[in-house]
Amino acid sequence: AMDRGGPRDLAAIGQGLVAAASLADLVADTGAGELTAAAEGLARPDQVLAAHLAAALAEDLPLLKRDGGFVRPGYRDSLDETRALRDESRRVIASLQTRYAEETGIRALKVKHNNVLGYFVEVAQQHGETFLKAPLNETFIHRQTMAGAMRFSTTELGQLEAKIAGAADRALGIELDVFAELVRAILDRSDAIRAAASAIAVLDVAASNATLAAEEAWCRPLVDNSLAFAVKQARHPVVEQAIRGRAPFVANDCDLSGSDGKSHEPRGRIWLITGPNMAGKSTFLRQNALVAVLAQAGAFVPAASAHIGIVDRLFSRVGAADDLARGRSTFMVEMVETAAILNQSGPRALVILDEIGRGTATFDGLSIAWAAVEHLHETNRCRALFATHFHELTVLSRRLDRLSNATMRVKEWRGDVIFLHEVTEGAADRSYGIQVAKLAGLPSTVVERARQVLAELEATDRSAPTRRMVDDLPLFAAAPRPVAAPQADPVLDLLDGMDPDDMTPREAHEALYALKARRVRTP
Image (cartoon, rainbow, N blue to C red; front, side, top):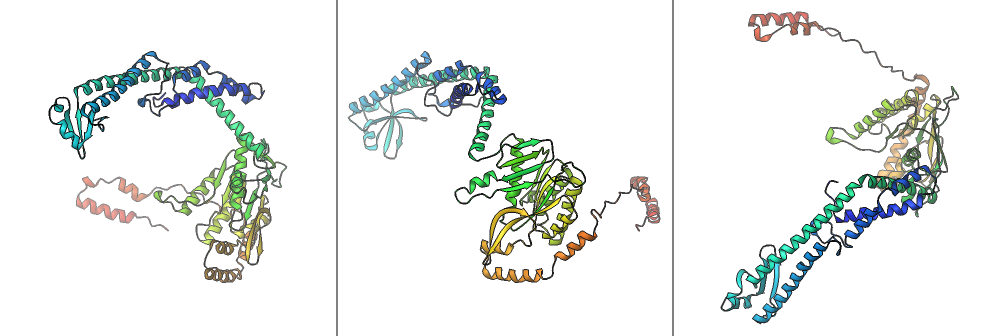
């Protein structure tokens, strides 16, 4: 439609129409609503067009129409005649080369062509000198001398070139006319072709989802109007494929459909997930978000069972990225995205948050994460997965009745940590960051010194202050202060009445004293 297609595009449409007819026969009697509608869309295209395209286009097609040679022999008589003339002229060129070689006695003589000289005779340098002398110079006209070769033209070659060029141009012109006719035929049936393409897309998605469900043991989710989110033995569809053959994927349950303790109405629940790096927290967050997306797209999901209340918005704050071109650091980007979540998510939203507050000072980050969890619980009241290394936040479960602590299971063996990738109820007592650093290859001296510093810090029992905070501080103690209405500024009123261009020096001096006398001091 945009006049940018080529011969191969025309052939693809023709082949697609043939395939559409075959698909229509396969799905015609399924009785399924979407597949029946797809079958109707596949049956609409006129198969006469597919036959027309197949008859018109050659087997081996060029990419661009200007290259020619894409119309099948026998499709257009005038084209076949012009091609015959063009091909016969080429045979005449070959016979002419043979005759010139015999007449001059130079077997290495060649008749060649380029875009500058057209057709020309080329001989080696030593033979070219004889062409410059009589009687050969009467037949061969010198055109170009090169290092090791000389080029000549003849009147006979010039006439033959004009005949060949005309035949080639006429043949290409006829092919372009055929191309334009085929394009018009396709555009006349464009609505039916688009309907077939849409139907094939529906079948493609349905078949792909069915293949995944059958081969990967995915389940059919229950999606309803509740606020439930109960998934059993869920897996991450991409990570599972990536590690296949190397290690089994550890499936995990997730249940965010608890009650708020005040009514029987299901409410969203927040899971606060702690545990070491590399243990699978981010994978767990993402896989549950993907389950929600797949379920609401109408697909089966990678789980043993799934009951999901409709999610109106899905929010994700995972990973680290900056936006330096706009003056935003990594932490600023994190805060902007967190702000969007806290300001927009509602009871039907699903939120996954990973490591909020880790990009700034420890106590700054802990304070932000603490307040964010409280806001999600009391204001947003959404279903949420909140992964963190701030173990101090786990004490919030004593006050926030819909907050549950979960942790990633690990095992220590001879000073090393083994990640089990299992999510269980409870809270981690530490992050095993030093063990992860050791796995990453940090020098042994750095690892040992880090152990010493950690032991000294843990001896101060940093968790004690947070326990007192959860007992002593009320939720949302820092209530927003009301904004006072702006008051009139007498100095500004006085300035509004002045026009410096019309004031004399004396008047300006007096106005300055008046401003000084009217100055308002801020208490």
